[in-house]
Image (tube, rainbow, N blue to C red; front, side, top):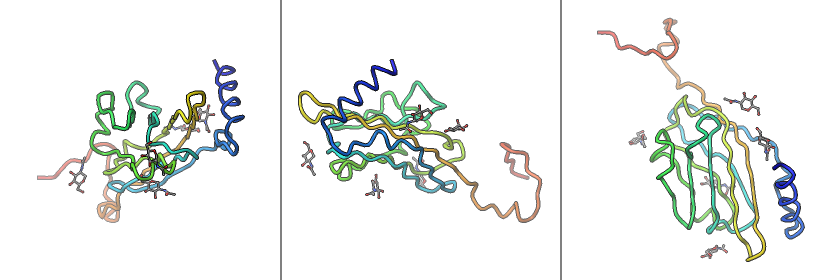
Length: 159
Ligand SMILES: *[C@@H]1O[C@H](CO)[C@@H](O)[C@H](O)[C@H]1NC(C)=O
Ligand SMILES: *[C@@H]1O[C@H](CO)[C@@H](O)[C@H](O)[C@H]1NC(C)=O
Ligand SMILES: *[C@@H]1O[C@H](CO)[C@@H](O)[C@H](O)[C@H]1NC(C)=O
Ligand SMILES: *[C@@H]1O[C@H](CO)[C@@H](O)[C@H](O)[C@H]1NC(C)=O
Ligand SMILES: *[C@@H]1O[C@H](CO)[C@@H](O)[C@H](O)[C@H]1NC(C)=O
């Protein structure tokens, strides 16, 4: 499996100078709760007609964002991300398949992968993979300054 992938990648690399899959380091993005996060991923091709799969490690079966045939496909999207993700069509034509994620919550923290492939001619597919780690910092909470002890995960309103 892995060797098939390597053969595929190297054949792609032969056709495209300056290819990018070897860059391969994980990028880290740090935002606060409710911020907008941009998860970076770039290709050198026009990605308008690409298949772009953004996934999160923790929700393996469903997509964070799935783009295909020039359109977003929400059928297989993890509902936690519904209405919060977007790819910029304008940016995609320049190879930028970074994902915009709005209304970030602490549950969004984790590792994301992007798998983007585009046919650049009938014989050649350009394939780009990106790893991004999203770190979410808590919102500034005045209660913390008042030294209240809070049990993680339970925020109860006092009557
Ligand atoms: C992404 O992470 C996976 C495993 O976590 C690793 O196998 C892969 O090589 C990484 N890819 C890149 C482009 O860094
Ligand atoms: C994101 O937050 C804004 C307010 O900050 C709200 O108007 C909007 O409906 C939220 N969107 C989603 C998808 O939750
Ligand atoms: C890539 O696209 C995103 C929008 O999806 C944009 O916010 C970001 O600035 C773009 N990055 C570059 C380097 O153009
Ligand atoms: C990218 O491809 C689309 C669809 O083929 C095309 O409409 C657009 O003009 C291209 N953009 C650039 C910058 O080449
Ligand atoms: C994300 O990946 C890193 C290694 O690249 C790993 O140390 C970390 O535990 C992962 N985080 C989650 C939430 O899976």
